[in-house]
Image (cartoon, rainbow, N blue to C red; front, top):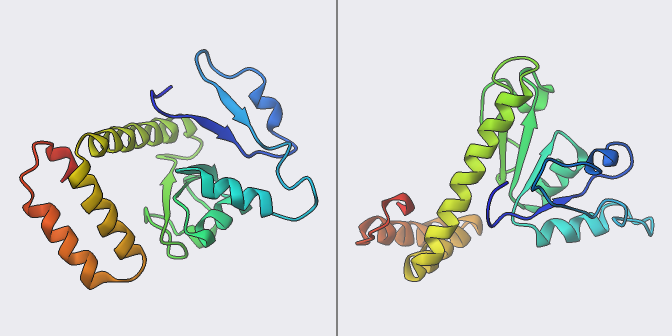
Length: 173
């Protein structure tokens, strides 16, 4: 359980029973039963993805929806996944907002989850540091937004400013 992280489940139908008894201290808000209940495929799910900071999922339709919407998504893969993910890359060739995490060896979901937990802890720490350095954070957010909008020249000038910044929080660089 990470301080500052809220967990939401988008799981529908089979698999939701796993939410009944989560590990001690873990609170998971179950959105799955209500998603797309009116019959409009993925409309509610897309809205939920826009409200979340990050989706962590296995190779599912929701992973593709998040990627297509440009939402941050981490996909957990088997050691030898479906062909579309390749065998080694950590980024998706299909979606710019997607990171791929792979089992270190066949069947080793524990090792994969430890790696994801470590990366998530680092992301939470970075966001905490950014919150403590508002001017730096504003410049970083602007650089990322410009980059994602395809305005690379403008983003580059923001990135250069960040690299030149006299920041007492080196983790931000």
